Image (cartoon, rainbow, N blue to C red; front, side, top):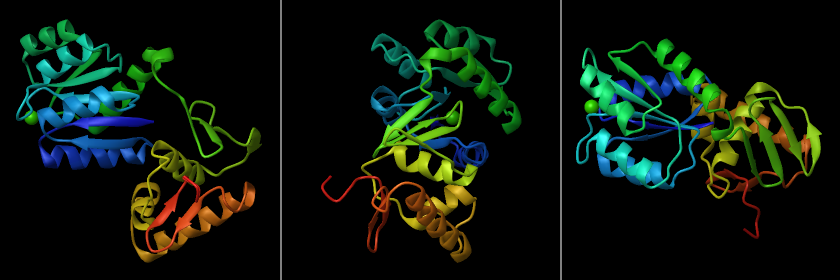
Length: 221
Ligand code: CA
């Protein structure tokens, strides 16, 4: 599932992103108010983690604009510790949950999962692209309507490609997000995983763009 992380503190953002990725989430990070607002309005996210103190446009204004524009994505706001006014204002503006700073990443992840469960029908659990359909709840995968068996790492790799089916992914970036490291061994493991997914489906299911990386967009796309 894709999560938008809106946070201008680089240390908190890096740490939170790493923890979320280890839980299998795909994280887009934005650090300024205008970027966050634009991305949240047009992006397809299962949930948004929104720091209220952002440069350029504050989180509360962004939240109100999203809700006024019909954005229904579940939103967790990050507030200053002890600021009950921020909490009240946040709920009034359409937040679904809040977490005071500083927070433990374990608590953030537990609350995020609860938020996604509560959101139920609002949160998208299937993703499709390039002939694949992934169900993130049941962990089932089909290719051309035929069920295929994937390992958890292969599942994560495919979910990453499907999240942006037109994009070409650098093998080292895939290694970092899927394996948690980006050395040569991890890159070789990614290449082996791609080969296995092709064997389970079709040699052209994942395209290689020589010198750039892998994509679900076929040659004609
Ligand atoms: Ca901030």
